[in-house]
Figure: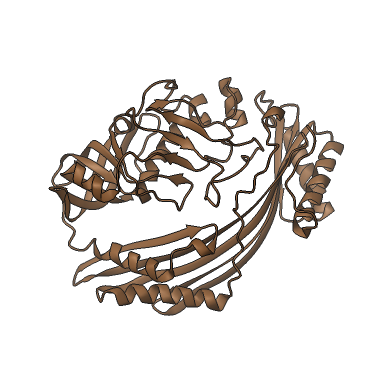
Length: 450
């Protein structure tokens, strides 16, 4: 394969990363490695947190790292360093080679297949540095907290309001000649509050996160939403044990798709540790459910032209018409299964479940009676059996309207039944993370309360 990369001519940082990469690959070859790959990156960021009108933390960070993996046939060794000097690189490569010489042969080890590597690098608009002075960041965090306090006198305390910003440049390279560089940024604002009256106290939070700071919600709106979410929890009651339909709000509905990904990931499948083993081609959701990857959405959190092995990403269906059409595989797990990588080394890329209905209010009306869950507590999910049990906080719905908040209950079921019970997916899609979903209504779950 001819060398290919998406570097900007004259960019000193990028050229430095490329020089380090070429040096490390050259040293690995001189030590007798038959193949080598590496990930190298530099980043910088800052964050501030204020609490009750005072500055609590102020941080700036700069980091860089180089991780190199070498192969002697099918034996593999890996080492890392944060020192980009020639001597440090040579020492790290030697360490990786020494490790490889003492590891067991694994016929599935190796670089990604050449024909799968990316050759095109579209600009996905992921890099938006934010020229933010520390004093300005502090002021924004104070304004966020102040907006929360001024929205209602019952907001009595805060766990902090924060502003953060990070930019980074990463380069993946291998001895097949692949060079792939990605520039990215991530900026966020968040606020966590405590509110209540007398002995009835609750806490909640809200945040926003974007590639481009210009797309962030205003700090005042984040503070007010945090206050609203905190105060709506006041007066929480307990609920009777029973079977009810349950709506997951978007911020936690993504966890359901996370369980799906875990169950269809290569490592779970080749270990035969998944409740969805041998389910490819089978219907596991209702026929109106579509779950797919959209790796090339501009500015999106999970966008990338290639995965962490350099394999080209592309839009693809994982579930279509409720049928499981594909798995989530890296090169290693694909080889173990006798399949081809799905470009998911490092995770999924903007995993999306298409909406089938209107927003949360419409789902509540269509549900009529049941629960809206806004928070999950603890972790009781077994992806081998599909058994599911989580503590939760939420709201009781009667006659298509929220009546009051409820707490101290557990929702339970089996993921096989839960997936088949997806009755509706809302249009209120949460775009802040790499999983994109609206509210999800499941038609029947066991709720353990009083």
